[in-house]
Image (cartoon, rainbow, N blue to C red):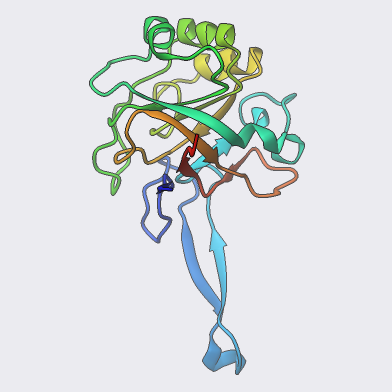
Length: 208
């Protein structure tokens, strides 16, 4: 049974949103200083690397991470390859999605060099969100920092997804994952008041 790690590695210098808190790991105590252990400390944005957005991220009345249902982030998921597309459209969703799919991961391959923050991505159209809702999807994942254009202030896709109770997983690494169905595990940390959370996301080949 093959396992795909679809998480971005976190390291000092990993690209994050311009102006946001950069990721930094350091040792608060070293084994030499403490006499027994190394103890690390981490500073980072909740939207660094592979992460989930809680609705509170973009609406003050939305749920925070601590209030989210963990079942959203575990279960069957379909990877849909939309490489070379300029936008994720309703037509793509209608043509490629199965009726019983609850989680969809879009493989755009637009973030070629993950050592730098991208300057262009493939947004999710509001019409595509409506189609996802018609299929009964509860989670959308993308291999980009956002489901909206990087300079968007309106965040139309974020809000459209929220209106249809579809949750968001961003920053996936799907380069080596063939299109198809898998089991997804992408659990957020138990950050009760947070607007988002890093995740360790994996896909596992289905046995049946």
